[in-house]
Amino acid sequence: MKAFNGFPLKAKFTPIPNIFFSEVLPEIDDLPELKVTLHIFWVLYQKKGYPRFITFDELISDPGLVRGLGGEDSPSSPLRRGLNSSVSRGTLLCLKMEHDGETHELYFVNNDEGEKAVGQIKSGELKLGALVKAEPCPVSREQPNIFTLYEQNIGMLTPIIAEELKEAERLYPASWIEDAFKEAVDLNKRSWRYISRILERWAAEGKNDGEPGRDPKADSSPEEYRRRYGHLLKR
Image 1: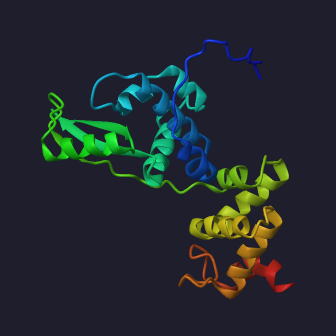
Image 2 (image 1 turned 45 degrees about the horizontal axis):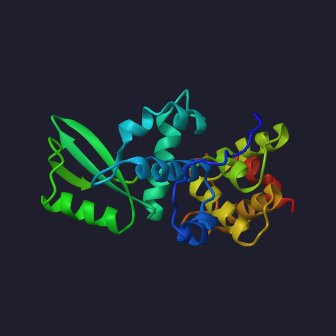
């Protein structure tokens, strides 16, 4: 880690609403979302005129942001995740603009100014040059894999845990895994042992969401069922 030398006496400041720290920040548990949100506050504060927004192309072209998100190999993935989370949470507003077959995504801070600008653009009252068609950005929710869930909710992976996670990912539906992590976090039981017990119980007894209590991809033979779930029958 590179040591920081401290803030200079006459450093410039970026204003952030106090409500961000009291209501939004405590709910953010995803680092890309936090970094993207703060970066956009910083960039938009420096912009002049009206309306103030930033495009996806501007964000993906910022080497500092991309490096900070750890997305040098696939820069759009963590950036997209952070933007989607921020829009879903309501911190940012997004409009998709189309021109000459190209799509442009515009991001605004969700405040009075941002809401007003988005409304004026959508109604046609405010024109943005050649960008003529406005519609809300679709927000896709990417389901995190089991390794991401573990690192976000429990801690660093070990080789032994990684092997257990691989086996669990093979045995159980992705939705079960995510729900099991959520249940453990809600109960403040942040351990893989507790989460695996939840999954084992659902596999043995069924889950109250209409899904069967066994891997839907498993072979239907009794031998395959015993091979996969025999460890449950012995308990």
